[in-house]
Amino acid sequence: MTGVYKALVPSDKFSAQIKLLVSCFFIVSVINAVSGTVPFWDISDILEADTSYNDYSVQLEKLTAKETADVLRRRISEKLAEENIVPEKIYVDVNISESGSISISEIKLVFIRKEYELHGRRAVVLAKSVTGTGIKVTAEPDSRTEKEREGQ
Image 1 (spheres, rainbow, N blue to C red):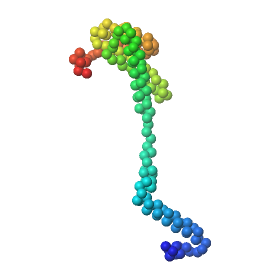
Image 2 (image 1 turned 90 degrees about the vertical axis):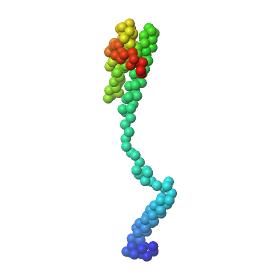
Image 3 (image 1 turned 135 degrees about the horizontal axis):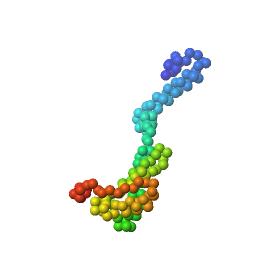
Image 4 (image 1 turned 45 degrees about the vertical axis):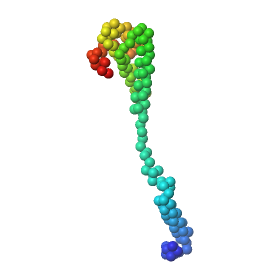
């Protein structure tokens, strides 16, 4: 080591710089030797960390739309239940704009054919009392047969 050092130093005026370079080389060599035997010194995991960007806005919009539809569906069901009207399904069409505003474009009440004939119009009026007149509310009979409904 001393021989290599003396061969590298052309004169005394560069000895401080050469000592610094040799010291850095030995420090890096020791760190590499230790990091090979002790896994917690390995910084390759840090250097290779996943830095990709996860966009959760789509999931947030879906969850917000679902929650909005569920709340509105529950309120309409409660209002209809007060009049002993029970639809098969209540479909709520929720839209969320780029600016984050939520709008309901349509609510569809689906009834068994007999229930539709008895309560369809009244159900629309009651649902509009919950939602207001700006939202399209429709009622329709279930297009499935009784056997198909029982199968589900």
